[in-house]
Image (cartoon, rainbow, N blue to C red):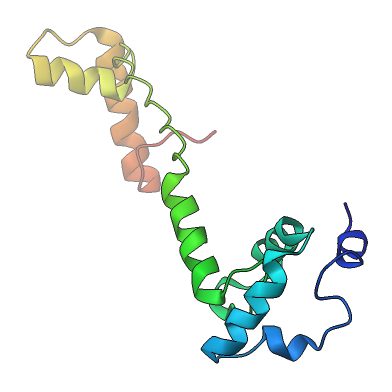
Length: 137
C-alpha cells in the first residue's frame, strides 16, 4: 500500500496538522483521540518509524508520541535476537617445510626435519634482504 493510498483514508485528513505537532499534553491527547479511531493507524505508525530520523522524533503519528515511539523502537531492538556469531575455524597445524613448521619443531622439542630447516633459512635470508619473512606472491 503506498503512502498516498492510506493517507487518503486517514482520520486526520483535512484537519490542521499543527495539532499533531505540539508539546502540550492536551494537544497530544486530542491528536491521539483522532488516531484511536483512524482506520490506517498502523500504516501511519509504520511509515513514521521507517522514515523519521531517530534523533529528531517529533509529533504524534499512529497514536504514539515521539517519546513513546522511541521506547517502542528500543524495546523492539532488545527483543530482536542478535545474529549468531560465526564459529571460528580451528587452527590448522603447522605443516612441515614451512617456517611455522620449523617453529613447531622448536616448541615441541622434536628433531627438525630438512624441509623445515630449509624453510627457516629461506625466511631468514628474506628478512635480511627485504625486511620481512613473508614470501612475495
